[in-house]
Amino acid sequence: MEQSDKANLPNKINSIEKALMILMVFREGQPSWGVRELSAHLGFSPSTIQRILQILKAYGFIRQDPNTRLYSLGNIYLSFFRALQDNYPITRIAMPFMKRLLSRTGETAHLSIIDTDRISRICISSLESTQELKATMPVGNRAPLYAGATSKCLLAFSPQDFIDKYLAKIKLEPLTNNTTVEIEQLIPELALIREQGYSSSLGEAWQGLGALSVPFSAFYQGMPPVQAAASLAMPEVRFNNYDHRKMCIEELLLAGRDFSEATGCYSGNSS
Image 1 (cartoon, rainbow, N blue to C red):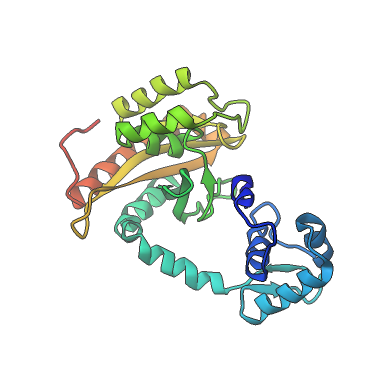
Image 2 (cartoon, rainbow, N blue to C red):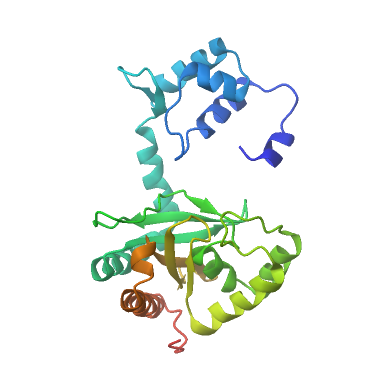
């Protein structure tokens, strides 16, 4: 849970809020927890943690390893994941193009959108590379809109009023030594992305990870165009290979153009 969200909670936390706070700590960095670890981390008594975990376990939200006795997320989230994908039709529309990107480049292909509730980039679909040395991008992964190729692509191709409001209130904090932390530097970067039609980054959000990204736009159900970003993530060693990076950029631009043509958003600008 974000610090700002915690500040809005009532002084007395009820059982539902405690259960949600427990579920929220099961993240990529630490997917498994013990009762005493959770107690120390959240400040709830071990008996409270144990009671809530047993209820969550009974409904499939949590499972327990019989050997280590550690708790982790249950398989019920797979059905939530399918429902989430159904909630974003753009994932289904984009899938053939994402599969083509993975096949032709050999790199992890993923699709992201802007989470307007938390004003951040969120990955909504990912196809992982089969290479031994590869980058990963789990569904649900988040990043601020100023760090990384995908985030900057989404920000650059957003409406100008959204960009202006975002830049007016955001504080650029470094995620790595390569993160852009000055608005004066970010603004021309966004302009260049719009001009060339793609974005690239190396180690801006995660050290050793390079990424390339293009906008995917789609019309459906009479709604305004939905803006997503299709990206390729790869280890630094392959990102620094000029010929490979050039090929990946060409494939991304082609996928972006073909996707836009298929969804009625193509304007004829091949950049």
